[in-house]
Length: 141
Ligand code: SF4
Image (cartoon, rainbow, N blue to C red):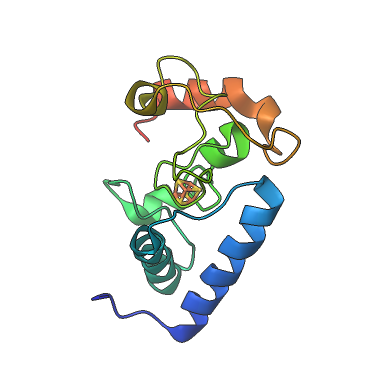
């Protein structure tokens, strides 16, 4: 791991990931290296920005981006669709859940239809899908 991050942030993020897996009915990736890289990126953003901004995206301006809630982990796509494009929260096979995504969403295009094995868990913001789709069209994020 090359990024210099605080032990406090690493521990907070690891703890969050464990709890969020339980809460959302997902697991971390069978390839632990994938999880480690994402956790490190989230911890780095927590240290440098004060928020665990998703590390798997490009932002023209990170400070501006954190004013929106959209990509602070667990992001809107996770809370609305149970979709994690970083592959941090996945099913037992290491696939991201795509069942609830709009059909033209990049996740659906990349991975096809991946059913949710635990539909009784997660998606606390499922009623915000229309707002999210409006945002996706109107704000490049
Ligand atoms: S895609 Fe969302 S849930 Fe997954 S690591 Fe990024 S912010 Fe977190």
